[in-house]
Image (cartoon, rainbow, N blue to C red; front, side):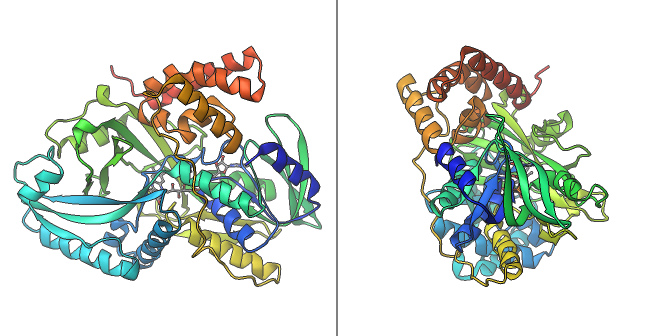
Length: 492
Ligand SMILES: Cc1cc2nc3c(=O)[nH]c(=O)nc-3n(C[C@H](O)[C@H](O)[C@H](O)COP(=O)(O)OP(=O)(O)OC[C@H]3O[C@@H](n4cnc5c(N)ncnc54)[C@H](O)[C@@H]3O)c2cc1C
C-alpha cells in the first residue's frame, strides 16, 4: 500500500466506476466488494482508516444476543452468518471468544440457557461452538473474580472477537491488491455534478494541499455519523438521516478478570447488556448508549458514562475497578438511522441504503460484523445502475493477512519499535504518531500513559521516514498529548 503510487493511479484514471467517501468498515467493505467485481474503484478517507467509529467498537464479531432479546431475528441471523464468513475469510484477524452469562436468580439459567440454544441454532452450519450450562464451581474456574455470593452457575456461549482497526487495514490492503485506489488523509470537499447528477468528487490531499477533481460513474457516501454533512453537500435542505449515539469503553488490567473468558451481563439499569472482554491482555468494559447532538471526530466519554460502567461492573466482580484503575478509555459514535424514538437504544442497527435525487448513494447504519453484507447490497445496487450485473464474490474472498503488529509495544526494545514504525509507514500508510499508537498498534487504547511516553520516539522515527522537519516532530508530540487527554478519566 504505497501512497505515492496510489496517488499516481488516481491521477492517471480518467473516470472511476465507483468512488467511495469514508474509510471505515462500511466504505472499506464496499471498496473490497466493488474492486473484486472488477469495477474501477476509488476510496477517500478524510483522516486515517478507521479513525471514526470503526476503531472504537467493543471488538465483537457477533450476532448480538441483545437483538435476540429484542426479537430482531432477521438482524441476528444475518449477523451470525457474517460472523461465520468472517472467521473463514480472515482467520488470523478474528477469533472464537468464550462468554459466560452469570446466573444469580433461579430463572436465569433456564431463560438464558434456552435463549442461547436458539442463538446456536440460528447460526446453523456456521456455528462456532455450542452453548453449555455451567455449575457454580465451573463458572468460578473460568471467571475466578466473579462475585460468588448467590451465584448459581452460568450459561457459556461463543462469539467472535477481532481487532477493528487491524481488520480495516486488511480490507484496505485487500482492495488495493484488487487494483482499487484507497487513500487516507484525502477529505472529499465537494461533490461534482453534471446536469444535477453527481458525477464525481473534489478531494484534497491534506498532507500536500493538492486538490483533485475525480470523475466517477457512481459516488457512495459511507461516512458513518458524518453522513448528513455529505448529504448537505448534495442538498443543503435534506432531511437529517442519522441519530448519533455515543458508546464508551474503559480498559483495565487483567487482574480484574483473569483467564480468557468474557462476561456478558444481560441487563443493566437502562436495559442494555454490558461486556467485560479480555482483549490484548487487558479487559475492555462497555458500553453505554447516550444520544448526542453534535458529531465530533474525537468524542469524549462523559463522567456519567464512566460512573455507569464502573458501578455496574462493580456489582459482579469481587474487586471493584475505580477510576484510578482505568488504563485507557475510548468513545465511539453509532451511526444509527433516525427513527421517531428519542431513545437511541431502541433504534434499528439494520443498515440503510438510500439514493438521492441527484443519484448520490448513501450506505449507513449496520454493524462492523455486517460490513460485508452492507457492501454486497450497496454494490448490487450500483451493478443495477451501471447495467453490468457482475455478481458478488466476497462470501469466499480471503482477506489479505497482515504482518502481526503487537497491540502493546511499550515492553519492546527501541530498535524493534523503530522497525515496526518503518513497516507501518511503508506498508500500511501510517502518517502520524496517532495512526501508529492508536490504530496500527493499539497502545493508546490499552495504556494511554505508556502511549504518551512513546510519542517522541514515534514522532522522531516517522519524521526520518517521511522527511519531516523538527517543527513537525514537535507539533506531532503536542497534538498527540492533547488528544491523549480524552483517553484518561479525571481521577479527582
Ligand atoms: C461503542 C460502540 C461499540 C460498537 N461495538 C461493535 C461491536 O462490538 N461489533 C460490531 O459489529 N459493531 C459494533 N459497533 C458498530 C460499528 O463500530 C459501526 O457500525 C461501524 O464501525 C460503522 O462504520 P462506518 O464505516 O459506517 O463509520 P465510520 O467508522 O465512522 O467511518 C466513516 C468514515 O468517514 C470519514 N469521513 C467523514 N467525512 C468525510 C469526508 N468528507 N471525506 C472523506 N472521508 C470522510 C470519517 O473520517 C470516518 O473514518 C459499535 C459501535 C459503537 C459506537
